[in-house]
Image (cartoon, rainbow over all chains, first blue to last red):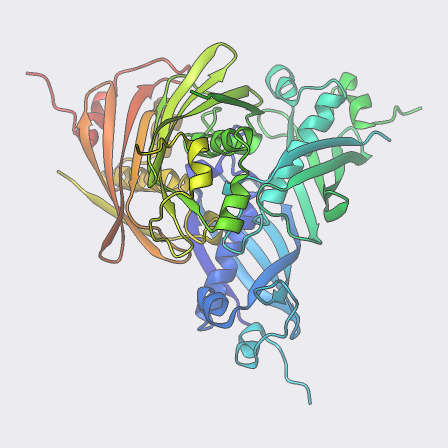
Length: 135
Length: 135
Length: 135
Length: 135
């Protein structure tokens, strides 16, 4: 199982008046994790959209918040594929500030064409998302 | 059970290049639902923070996406308390564009003081969040 | 000169750890002002994009901040066209919380087609943006 | 004159349905430029807020947009102080994708204390912002 790590700092724009990162931003951070996971697998998500017309639409997303993240904290997102088929893929995420786990999350996605109809993931992308060949 | 409805339009800023509302924004919309739910119960969330020093920190959030929402769509969020105690409260949300349900969601919150320590919800707020008295 | 007013509340998501609305969000609020200005003139901006393929691209934007806006404040944006031609339009904005002016701003836009090439504003839209006929 | 460069990728969340980065996000990118400019001068902006109670409040901001930025583009922000006094500081920014300049911008800031009253920048921070000593 491939796990990818990407690190960034909490932006001032991402804080709220509680003095911590606003909860919706964790879902943006998951996007960063997914994109960099794909890039580490040799897949530029932008190309998949532009060249193949395959979109990765979110159908379910969940985050469990354990500790707040603060402005300028370095957050590391660990991202991996926890389930996949030719129609869907599911990512898991663990987020850390230093050694401390601040959140655990997952997202489930449907592969769509440009008209938002479900499609099978093109064969050449299947290994990157861990899709097993049928025998 | 009190259900509150609040309606707003999808902002251009909330769309992404897929041409639909970006998925993290649904969590902002839930915030709008919660705040207006509280207001309808006679509670201004801002006062609870400023005057009582009670924060409503998210510890878990989930959204199931059924249909995309598009720019300028009128979205209605129906919000209600689905579980509560003196320490935590859980909200459920259904989001609609017209008659069509576009998403179902829930968030779980912990009551915290200004130092981010768990506190019991002040008694006078308990009825608004559906907290039952112990007998 | 037509001036349109639109009112909304500052969202929690829009605050930052300074306890006030983050400065970039004022530009989102200007978008709300523009869109509702257009709607008041009988123009749904979404239709102009979808049906006519005319985009309103920002080429210059400025905001002068006078007073902070706080969470849950009701902000009123007054929007009007301060200059226009068949190629460009310029909007002015004044933002208020109650009687107090919190910001003054302006944005300049270029009309583009779907390929991002400058176009002349279709004649039927010209009156809404105050474009005078040539004599 | 010190110029600092910081580079990041355009996030999917930052795009809009026009297929390019939404214009308000450039102001978030300026924040990244400022923060990293300060860090390069040995100043962690977070410390200035937390330890000295000095806030850098925006009073004016402007951006001229020259070319759109697209999803996953690597944007470089060049940031420098173009004017400063003990009461205010003004930053200039140039943003690039590759060799192409996509935007020019500036922001003006007032130093405030925690109660939002104007203060003089503490002497030890003055050199970082290019404040000259009076003779």
